[in-house]
Amino acid sequence: MLDIHTHVFCWGEDPRQGFLSEETRRRWLTRLIVRLTGLDREPGETRSDQIRNRLVRQLDESSLSRAVVLAQDAVYRDDGEPDAERTHVYVSNDYVLELAGRHEKILAGCSINPLRRDALEELERCAAAGSRLIKVHTAIQGVDPSLPEFEPFYRLAAELDVILMFHTGYEHSCRVISQKFTDPRRLVRPLDHGLRVIAAHCGTCTSFDREDYYPGFVEMMHRFPNLFGDTSILATWPRWKALGRLAGESESLRSRLLHGSDYPFPPARGPYIRRAGFRPGATRNPLDVDLAIKQSFDFSSGYATQGLAWFEPQPVDVLPGRQPSQAVATA
Ligand SMILES: [Zn+2]
Image (cartoon, rainbow, N blue to C red):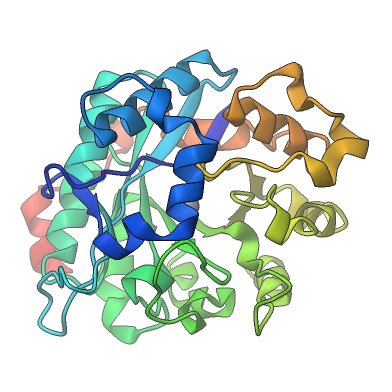
């Protein structure tokens, strides 16, 4: 089984690997997650070591066969250079690529802000290093996926046959640039390239948000057969109704739902006691608890497995037959 949406974070001991801004480290939600996940008790010399060790340990102990661990690219200025001041969460691509190289269950999900000057080179580099999925964080990275300037980026992604994951639905864990960019209806442009697009969180918002993008997600799922939704963060109190809503959708939509947890954000058990019992999955492993809660809903038989095939190593004869440098020159 595959968890297509998990995170590793870096505290900032070595900012080149990744960091949380001072503001993010102090946020009540960050402090709550640190407490709820028992991070202080995890072995490790630094906070970043503890975060990484906990992920590796709990993934190894879980019933999952693989998990995509996502990087988080920076915010970029108008000139395409990184904007450290406005970047509140950063996890470098090399950090997740290295993790994936060392741990069999981990698949690298690199992150590229298409506004960066070297976006095409970085896409080519990450794909060559084995990242089959690329994450774009619309709200935090300030990316409106509908911009015509991103045509070359989407074209190259389609050529390289990578999966693009976009954050959809209001974001609350960190300072955002615009919530408007998280509307799934803005995904027409990448979808028109025919590549697999994942709307992370299925466009869901919480009941205290000003808008609800879920109807837009449903509309887009009916329009585009190459659109998928992941269920990450949906087993939590602020979004507790989301899983029930998804389970009531058509079979065609449910068959394109992919399992994702949003680890290390822990699942809530309360809203699902009647379906999944007091101890979902009869385990304390948060990855398995999250999976058990979601499997108590009737999505599809391939809910937790269908994505696995996308990450199988490709035979050499089906790989795009051209030199990496050419793609950048022609894109
Ligand atoms: Zn996430």
